[in-house]
Image (cartoon, rainbow, N blue to C red; front, side, top):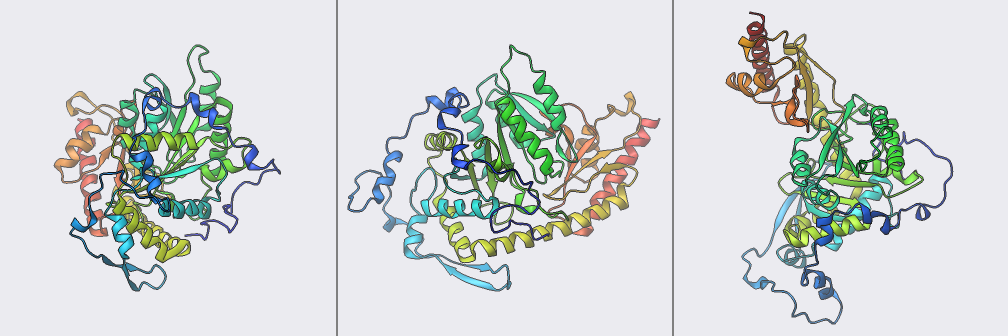
Length: 466
């Protein structure tokens, strides 16, 4: 992967340079700006009277009779040791939690996250995205980024609100916006990212008697399912539209660290907005699940303070806090590495998935050339390809332009499991596209899976030609 994590000043090598602007502090949107964005249900939430006082227990000299915490003497885990692979030397490094770390990991902690871990992650955002304190954002930890996306959606969307959703989109967020009562409007994408011109035309011609969308949801690196990484030019256009039409950008970025394109990594929305006339329209969701551990559920949100407050309030009212154990273990591991070794690790992970991608693409050419069309992804874990099904007929049970029957029924009967594209479209409309993951299988199984898919497609084409 290109050496493009970020330059020492936090700017990506290919970031567009802007004329000299006023200090960032003068361009940060005030807290009052977000009043109209916060949902009614979020405004109705009230603080947990116990949890809001927990930070006071750390005040020197305070003897706390506050919380009903279980006594640590009753916990059966008395020590914890593990080994950590050094991303530079590949050596196995023994690591132990101290008595204090173990005690903290097994006990209740704050709803926002453990302070020491939050500090480390704030430093990571400066290292990776060039964003510093005092630039109109704060950070909170969650049980994976999906947990935080769900809470942010509920913090921002009222029933009936129009929300802009890039399409195709990660299928997991569709139920989130649906349960919040949002009216999902698909924003088309291509191989360069969001169709900014199409979005501009839609918003410029918006009905005067209908409130404009409050948020736009996007996955800008290795988009799930399409694998597309948005260009810097498209990102800047979307940022300009956000200012013009007054919406927030929900930047869901679980594949940021899985970029393996040949060109330098484009800067994030979070990075780019630092040089915009207004700062504070990006709500960023990060995940280390894809590069450290999916089971540990390591997610965090970087956003303007009122949105962080709303998300943390939701946590107080629902699951109390993200797991202390995950946070302490993650922090210990990341402290052993530091930012530079984390960079070395994610670079190795990205190279691993680049090789996986190449294997899958080679087998795609072998088995599906002439039967499917695709673009080669530069990040993430997925191929998004269009089946060439031929003409359809009533006897086949297939509808023109629909992969549903082929993938859900015929392919599964032939022993291969993938996802039909319709599940990634908020409208549920028919499509010939299919999503396949290349993250796990060895080459022989990829070969066999795509051979079976080839058989399935050919049989479907025979059926519809009768």
